[in-house]
Each structure stands twice: as C-alpha cells, then as structure tokens.
Image (tube, rainbow, N blue to C red; front, side):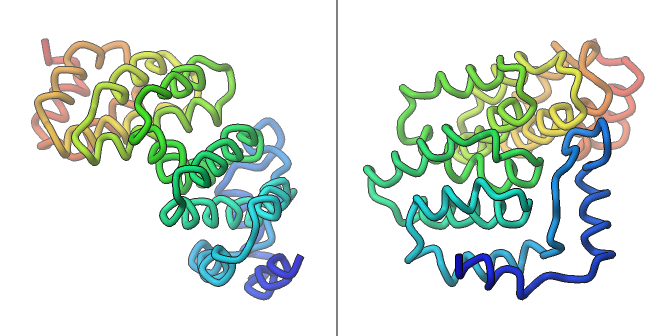
Length: 236
C-alpha cells in the first residue's frame, strides 16, 4: 500500500524502536508481548493520516489495522477518528462496526486512548440506547476491551454525563491489571475536574478497596492534605 510506504519514510533509528518497545512493554510475559515497532512518532503518524484520511477506503483502513506493526495499526485508528468527525450517520455506523469487530487489533494502551472515545464514545453519546456494549466490554476478560469500555466514557464526562463512567469504574474496581487501574483512575480524575463532589462521593464509598494505583491517579489533582487523608485511610 502506498500509505505504508509514506509512513515508513518517517521511521527513526533502531534505538527509537527499542525505546518504544520498552515503553509499551513488549517483553516476554508483558501485556504487549511480541508487538513490533517501526520507530515513528505520533506527530509524524498524524501527518500521514491527515494526507490520506479523505481518500482511503474503510476496507483499506481495515487492512492497515490488521498490520503486525504497531504504528500502522495506530495510523489506521487515527484515520478512523478523522473520518468519524466528518461522517454522516451511515458511515459512522460502518466505522464503529469496523472498530468493534476488530478490537483484537486495538491492542495497546495508546491505540485505545487515541481512538476509543473519538469513535465508540462519540457514537454512543449520540445513540445512548446502544451503550450495553460498554458494559459487555467491561465484564469481558480482555484487557483491551476493558480499557476501551472506561476510556470511551471520556466523551460523556466532557459533556457532563458521569453515570456510565462511575458504573464501569465499579465493575473494574477489583481488576488485577495495572493498565485498568490507571485508566479508571484517569477517568475518575476527569469526573472530578468537572464535578468534584461526584468524584469525592464515589471515592469515599470505594477508596479503601481500590488498587493503590487507581486511587493515586484519581486523587492526583487534590490538595495535598486531602490526598494524604485518602492515602492514609483517614476519610470516613
């Protein structure tokens, strides 16, 4: 594909590839074991996406998404987010179906975080009757679906809707994956930026059973005194 050749023009040195592989935890037994990097930064991937997203077909995007290379999958997902912004109802549905039916290729924290709320979240914000899929993903045993479920709610938070974020956070509360702890904590922190009282009430109810990382991410922006009260279990 021409777009792949264009992308590879931006490849950096081998040391950058090694850095990306380390940063994304691709070693044996790690959550992104075996993932392969070309060594291309996100700004450069966005340059290529901007050039091609208007003319590339969804079938070609799907082929790109199925790539063994991390950056090619990321390129496909960024293109889908750009297409989603301009798409009419029928094409939006096609984009979401492509996304949902190929989540096995949305298999990195950056792949999820740069796509989930722009694609699935945006669609569900406008089609609230179809939000069951978020709960299906949250209750699955798949790390990436779980992360998609909570990160997709970011767009709800930005529009002042917190219910789904809090419900999904409760489902994922005892999850054993660090990437889920971070994502849930991040979304709770975003709720707090919009409505401190809602986050505070949720934390008072659940903070003693939360994984430590989830709690730390949730209270990152709190005043230091209140942070310490939560960390030391002094909130009742």
